Amino acid sequence: MKIAIRAEGSTDIGELNIYGSLEKGPMLILLEKLECFQNLYSELGCTAEYSFIEWVYIHKKDIESSSEKRKKVVLRGKKSQREASIDTVLLKGFYNNSESFSSLAKEKEADIAIFFVDVDKDSIEDRYRQVKLGLNKHGFKDTGVPMIPNKISETWLMCCLSKYKNCAEHENSTTDKSSPNYPKKVCDESGYTRHKIAENCDPNQIDMPSFNQFREDFKIAVNSYLSYEVC
Image (cartoon, rainbow, N blue to C red):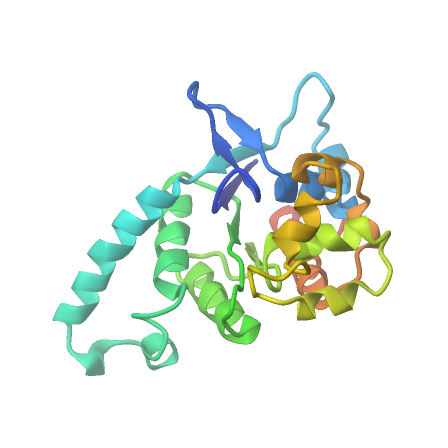
């Protein structure tokens, strides 16, 4: 099976190296340790020597290029011809990018599409809606997975560092980059790389709204792909 992924960089999902191979980032490391992913891994008969799960990395620049082309097409059309449900988010936020991503994922015959993006200073409800609408656009209604940490990916890693205690509180972390409590600084000063934090973490113990939403959406996607429940 193929799982399409969209990343921001090496500190989240990962990136392609000079040889075209995927260097997995901390968010992908966490994902592969989820119970649901491990169930899928076993169900497909994967082994340490060979995996039947292929990560399809769709480059950010390809998504943005496709988004610009689509945006121009929409602007040329009449407003009355646009879909009312997406009209208010079409030319802002991450609807356009996630819609382009899902189109590219469909072209590559992906079975599941995972779109990673941070919330940063936006509303997580708005960003989730934008991404979900974009994924739905090209056939990933149940198999499209928004992966959206609140506020940034390091927020989830902070839960790992705190040994899974009061993790929901980390979603209220400051976005002030000068603050010593800024999630990136907390991770930097932990003494561990982000990859090591993820490797030492059990994501099945993470309990925080944004991560729980991602985990639930991933379960739905896996069960929908298989047409029966393993998660």
